[in-house]
Length: 500
Image (cartoon, rainbow, N blue to C red):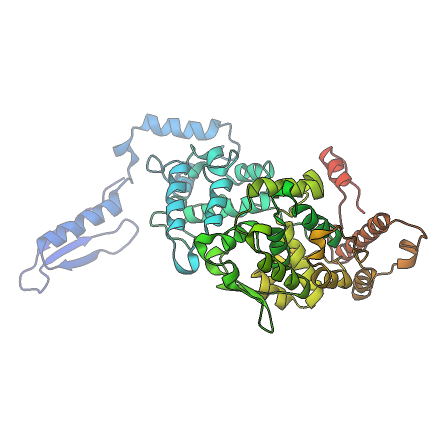
């Protein structure tokens, strides 16, 4: 193949005397360019030569034997998708998909940079200590099955959608872990809101990734009024280091355990200073510096009648009788009393029971039924509406039960064991659901009155009926309905599973 020749001459008397003249390879007519200096003209001449002649004649760069070997590889490859493809196709694919070689570092190198940038973020991008710790556990170096500990030694360019999907499917908390992994990969792609001056990925390995969604049909675990009474009575004993006051504070304000510890820690100088018992609307102020998750700048939680009498008693008798700040061995006491009331199921949060902060779940659910306003719940909990419905609120709690939670549970439960007959999953709630969604179901036939039936048996029947109603609602909306634990086990063994 003949090279394109570029001629250079000086034409005196012109403003730009140095002329370049050549005939492009794919053109019929010649082209001319004029330049001020010879140096500029020579520089442009080399650029044109490289464009017109560079790598056109492969025989100048590699010998014919090498070209023949490459063609033979493309014909005889075991990769059926590449077999028979031309060299130009292979080169085009390489130029499009090649993301880097030796200059790409292992994943753990990039996670260290990612961690530093997120920890130093300011303003709306600032993260709480809890969120940073969660990242270390889910995708960092702390968790034994974390993303970095599993794939930290490979390069980001070696990640595939199948590899990430298999990893998420085989580990616990796939929804939250998946969100954390995707956020990290988006940062490596340069698509994150957090700054990355040198993205190491061009092609997204999370395109088409399927994250497990929250199971909206799952009933959220909460404490019944009787369980609250039993727990507070049990906590006000030497065995549990007289921790009833702290438990009551969590149940009736909805603060998380870590937030409660910080609120009463003398280092933060909060406690009684942030509790107003004398105004027309008694309330607690939870400032932003102790809130676990970033959101509203503070939370104002109103104190209802039952808890108001409790707080006045706590304040009058002091820290020695009802300790808030100095509960000895709090973590052991917290775990032990939960196990005593609810058994092993709430000691460790699992995929079947995500109510790790059961006091907060209980407060939010009862507040929603008590106030009949999601706006009030959003204001006092500091949590957005979608999260409240998807993660916290159990819709089968009755309005009467919620009223008793805020009015009837008071300081009496600490000094004597109280039995609450108002603890129930209210039939009126189920009636509302049936009427609202136009379900054809006979409530009296499904849950008939049985004389002499124990309270626990009645509650079990109501729960089962409530789950059936919610399942019918789900299927009416096009969902799968409620799936029983037995059905999940059946599908794991390869069966179809049973649906209620």
